[in-house]
Image (spheres, rainbow, N blue to C red):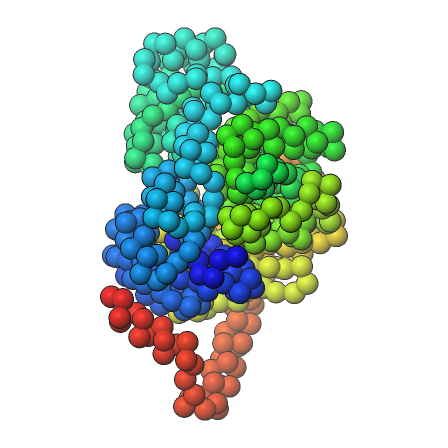
Amino acid sequence: MFKKILIANRGEIALRVMRTCRELGIEVVAVFSDADRTAPHVLFADEAYHIGPAPSTESYLNYEKILEVARESGTEAIHPGYGFLSENTDFAREVSKAGIVFIGPSASAIKIMGDKTMARQTMLKTQVPVVPGTQEPIADISQALKVAKEIGFPVLIKAAGGGGKGMRIVNSADEFEDAVGKAERESQSAFGDGRVYVEKYLEEPHHIEFQILADAHGNTIHLNERECSIQRRYQKVIEESPSPFIDEDLRSKMGQAAVETAESCNYVGAGTVEFLVDKHRNFYFLEMNTRLQVEHPVTEMVTGIDLVAEQIRIASGQTLSIKQTDICTTGHAIECRIYAEDAAHDFAPSTGEIVMLQIPDGAGTRFDGAIRQGIEITPYYDPMLGKLICWAKDRDSALNRSERALREFYIGGIETTIQFCRSVVRHPVFRKGTYDTHFYTNFRQELHADLAASTDEILLVAGGSLYHHQNQIKHSSNSSTSAKKTRSNWVSAQLGRND
């Protein structure tokens, strides 16, 4: 087992990984930008190193600097978290060349599955069904339009080098060329890669993914599914496990397909195979994410398996600690992503200081975040503040618990998606489990009307948080201020020494 791991990330995922490392008796090294000098992940770590200015291109994406820190700190392994460098083929290769273990799949597996067109070509050699479309990025508009006509409109233009951005639905041949151009520009801006391809657009689809684990000894398993169909602008908002849509027979078939997908590229580590499932329960390979997913906690809650711990054990050369026959899910889990966004104004990013904070707790309630009162939310990074995960014995109970927790959740000083998530959770279609990926589009007006939550209710929560905060201040003023934590002194010294 490793003695020291560097976390090449920030925010809630850096803290999430660090906590598991602590439980395994592993020292953790943090890296930070100018904007994150006193961020929670920096204060939590055993060591912290400054790596550059606030923009991610000059800090968290600067893998030469991160490798320099890894060598200086005596790091044995690097965990990339998700986002940033987690699916960067060059970074994974350079980490290995430096004699450091990359906690993730091989560079070749990342390359195969990270490029959506290459992944499609790979899967066409297997028995896993793939959505009809082009096999190569679009180079000739007329040829691509011919394919689109053959598979039938509507079609989807998708980025070859990433997900969520660079996507356009095209309903007719007249719209095709313009949509391709827009998708290429957006893809170039988001991923530095303007290649796009054509895929058949499935109507009333469900976005369902399977968590997989694979070791270097030939063992690959899946940990069942997560339903990820609540999205806005192709970005996930709420996820749950198990899916209320699929049955045991389909679960078994999709699980086998997920394992076959991982085995097709000799995958080692934790990963996620994503599928689209149409209203007739026909499923198709969508993509594979060669990293930990934002929504991994819902799988952890229903299986009781620490996915980060499994990642670390696999990377250290151990065999999987569990077999497929050991996987047993209990209860139901729902995750709500909390973003610093103004849902009432097209989810515009919100920045500023968190002046008041009340995080819900209680049985079956977990919050994965890296926020505290007084922290500044900057425009430099992804606006996700954290995730609220609620588990209960069944779906109805999990829904009720989620609504209760969201009612108690308050973040003052910035706009957040807390109330939006609550609107979704209590919507009758979501509660019935009969939704698909068009949920937000279909019920946008209802959801936004519900966003105008009772002013009295919000003020009541805010007032409770303020009362709690004032009591803390009063208690703090009566306590001795002479004692200083060793860790705080060490961090202060590190922030100066590594500048």
